[in-house]
Length: 254
Image (tube, rainbow, N blue to C red; front, top):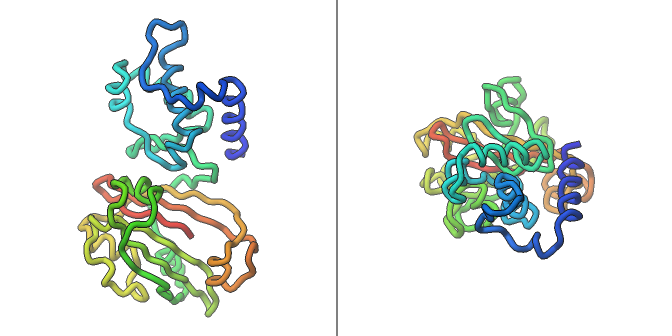
């Protein structure tokens, strides 16, 4: 349902505004126009989202930053963001900020934020971990954007497969801010859980996060490691994890 709502809002927007207006991202406000100021700001943000300048799960500037950018009151910004939240284009996370909504289902996380392996341990389910790859480097602008670090900055990537009862159950790809966890690539992830390693190297606990779920068809790489056929249905999870200092530390694709 969320996907349908977001898609419909985009279609409606495109039919109301011509392509020229859509392509020209507004940088200044026309305060003499009859068009309400908060509506101009909400349309500016819509442009950013529709043109993929602000991608899914991207954290937008704070209301104070936007108020300063447009030289308007914070109340005007809050009204614009509230309208876009009602339309399903933005999502507000208490204590974290406002994000571009995902077309996937988002799990409202409870007080306890645990990893998949921690959940298996708590349920006394034995598992083994095979490390496919661990390396540092640059991967994509999208990864760096979600980690809230500059483009081309070094990131640690970890790829693993979790086996339960001798069969592959989960294929994991994690990206971690290397500047906050130097030396993490030297740890043995067949026996050490990633969240434990992050907390040890960063010096901060992981306290919260956001998770997004969707049903997808397995690509060739996923099918290979899960020992299934390409295009078989799989349960896909995206995750963004935060340290206690409110910094994004890890994103993952399961």
